[in-house]
Image 1 (cartoon, rainbow, N blue to C red):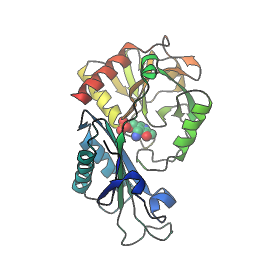
Image 2 (image 1 turned 90 degrees about the vertical axis):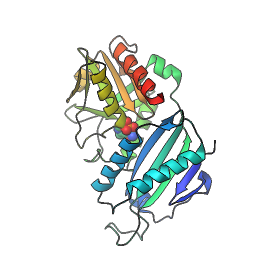
Image 3 (image 1 turned 30 degrees about the vertical axis):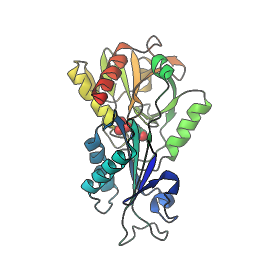
Image 4 (image 1 turned 180 degrees about the horizontal axis):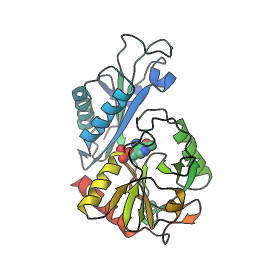
Length: 280
Ligand code: PMP
């Protein structure tokens, strides 16, 4: 089960893969990324991740990158590594060029990937639920594009850990609950699953979409609408969604107990169904 890297067409050990110091991803954060997981040797939602990658590339006005070439590279790396439960990180930067803010002429986007075993969330965290704090959102205005400019997310996650909790949830200055540092957030109120609508302020999470579809299939009412911190604190249940996060219950937020402080039935049902689908 080797951990491997892909570097512009070449597959090699991760510690042998190096990028030039004038890569624009390194100097400007001028790069986009995706993270795809596999279950039992099958990639989950590959096409959806490729769709979002294209959307991010277009959003940053990158020169065209062949979707087919990226898909082929992902599949080749995945086959080579033979990791059943893999996490594939894909990063595409605008290219390598002497440092200058303006887009350089005639450079090629640089495609790099790594593949490793997924680091599963601890079973106790899934069983007992996680804790979180809220934090005023101080990110840029295009959080719908999956760029590598993640410093606010990094600082927020660290602040959460320093506060002794699992994660931080970004909230607007008016108190609208947006998303967490690397996942979307849903609440359950009056039996309805509610999540922030798709706007430039949140990432269009693949798992968020899968969960919305599962709700419709399972006849669980679901609504994409704004909600504020008072609704979050008063929710029956709350949970995060993400590729590795899957559906993760949050049972305490800013010291408020959510519902009865236990993992709720809607959260448990959605996680169980998501797992069944992903390993099917
Ligand atoms: N929001 C943010 C800020 C994220 O980084 C992620 C994970 N990439 C998500 C939401 C969840 O997205 P997905 O379900 O596609 O993993």
